[in-house]
Image 1: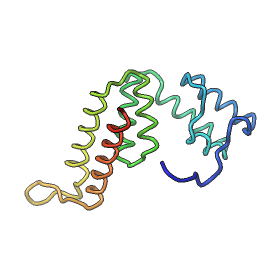
Image 2: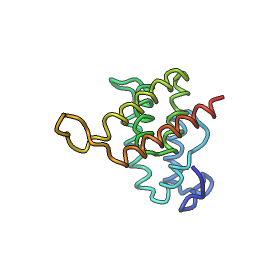
Image 3: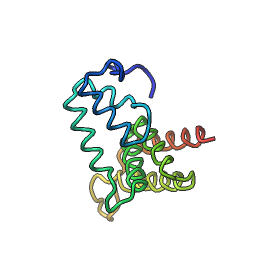
Length: 155
């Protein structure tokens, strides 16, 4: 999460009426008084912003899975994909929904183990074992870096 965004962020006061309507819905739905940078970048294309928000709102709405479980899944996928911004954003959201530090550490342990034991599988080896790919080892290293950072910033 370093460096400047590649496009300027569309702040609320500079946004069009269509973008403000989406921002207002995001803030009301999430019960916050600010918009994170992800949405401010998407606001360059108001139709994309609206479509993305509507999809996120629908998927993250109450259903068979509770809100915290959905955020935990989002953390797992974000950490695996190496998206630092999304990992932090959804970790904050999960904390707001009651996630404990113990739950976060256990989640990250499961994510790390899954990435260690499953993503290296390119194809079955003769003995039914997986061949290890270099990119999977890089992902494991990234995961451990994110985990250490979350541990350090939680204190």
